[in-house]
Length: 524
Image (cartoon, rainbow, N blue to C red; front, side, top):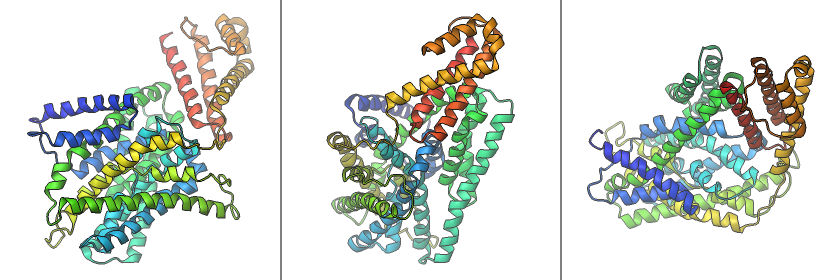
């Protein structure tokens, strides 16, 4: 480890430079990082890296899921819950089943159990890749919300399929009622453990004498404890991190100070940035290890199998997207759906085209044991590894490079799910000023008469201009202003809950601005 430290340091620098290049040329950085890893792996004398699956599952996955749970909009997830759940569970299962049938029929030596094992590995799309692409192009809010919500849950469903298939391959049998009980426990147990641990940490933040530094450290520890506790109880660590993360994110303003929130965002953005960069670079760097174990099958045949499975995944996801629309159009006759209008043919196609695979698939493939319990070699392990690598590479290259072009050249309708951004910004600023004046008049009328600084603040709110707290302010005025900020913050939180057409991203932007205003008070 120490001997290769300069190499690892060089990789970090290369990752930063490649991500800067990706932003410059408008290409999703996972594509460049995987290709760079491939290129580096062919350089003579480069250390051969062994990617330990535990490194991915226990070091990288919990914080990345946790950070995603903090950034996703719970309101949007709830609005599109049916299609999110269908993609995260139903589509993942159908995808795994399709891969199982094709692998069993076309790949020599593949049983249905091995096919389901491969299907469980390659079925979950990677959210980081889609997110990196979508930041360059504008898509309907509903599409972004579905992709974000799906990404939080599909890893859990695919890993559950993977575990059951692994047991079936190892034992040669599949007991459906045992599987049903275990499946239920994985789901329910993971959610319960995540919520329970999240609740404990929420109370710890609130009642212990923490400051911003200790709050941030606690947030860094939280996802690992959730994941390890759930996995130790043989339930889903992914669901534990997601459910606990959503709970803490939803209640962040109840137990974190403005200082902890402002600094925590910066720390987590940098932390997830480097984690995502490293894992995609590792995919490319792992090629020598993957190809070295490929015996008994020619490289060209193995590439062909990988291309076949990739085609099944792409076509299957597109068909599933259209199927979800058809089911929604039928269901609207019996239940209330989020939107009963026909979205057109382009949105389902684009939603189906966002199926890039990533590091979770590679980690799952690497976690397949080398030997069965009786000492025999695990069947087709090396071929499964190679097919998984080809699937990741092809989906990143084919879909990742073409998705921005498709989005730009397809006229996607504006569904009007949210108020236009400019109108929403103007309305929020106006109503925040009104709330500040109302709270000031109702609770601090005497102070308003006697304190020139409060009068100046009220004048700016009435004029609709921004406050600039760069002047000295009396302690009493600071206390009043801090109370007004708390009132505005609570009003924004209630506004987000009550107004379905208000984009939560705009609400969060103004909540951050209020936090920054409160931070300025520390220096007055």
